Length: 363
Image 1 (spheres, rainbow, N blue to C red):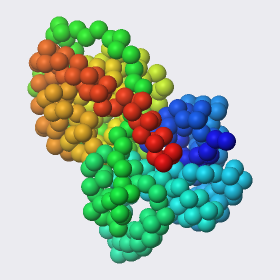
Image 2: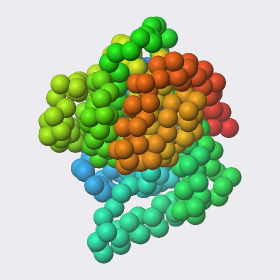
Image 3: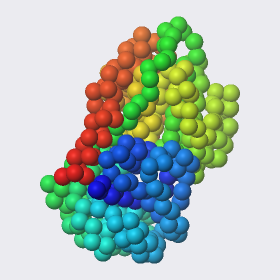
Image 4: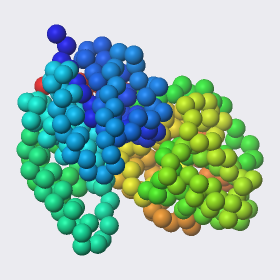
């Protein structure tokens, strides 16, 4: 009889962690009986889930909702779940508590990014400390913590009371796209692209400022922004305020990412923090060099001046300088792109990623 695995995540809205959950669920659905539980929202990515994977939506309210514990317990018992796989801190307390109370012996927690941001008021500091204490207490029941980068592993061991033997870093992996693009080395308009949730942590404002500076320096360039999110309208307005309308294309949420990337020259990532970016891996798989902020797991993904250029977070001048370099050195840009694809195939190809999680489930 197949073991039954339940993934728990807030939603299947557009995002890297959500894509990892779907990839894992779909690829291992032949070997395991797999379900995905969305605690708060559903999302467009539900359409990408295999028919072999069951979807459950709890409809919990935003913020802390202790009713989630009872709902997850019922879900576990009704479906006789063997393994609960929790994704991100936002559902950790509820999912681990429920799994423990339901008698699940194997609980896995994948950490896709930084710890949740909190305000600096006395009340929010107290709430953070209480939550952190609860997470430390519950960590004893977790079989394996899986940070998606070594930088996340380091903060996990530094900030949490976790046995290092329980921590197993696994880089995200994807099947990638076919290398079906022809790169022109003739001078022309540099076509930049970024893909992902339009949220503050992605720092699109710095991206636009860097583009503006590069254009003012004489570079001919366009930027395609793919994705939606809470900052979408603000970023559109900021682009207008910088007179970038004729240089930027906002596409919103799209599922045809490979086709959109096919004729682009450089991938841009300006996040203030990242684990292992799925969109960046997709760009690498198609042979795109990157300009990316040196944060979180990005230096584990981009080889500086090997497969792209790493820059300091929040530094629009450095971004402009990197854009100018890419525009003025097409041969180097081509070399970066070829190395990006080679590095992807060596380190981030899907089969290794799936095998490592399968080993965790089976151990």
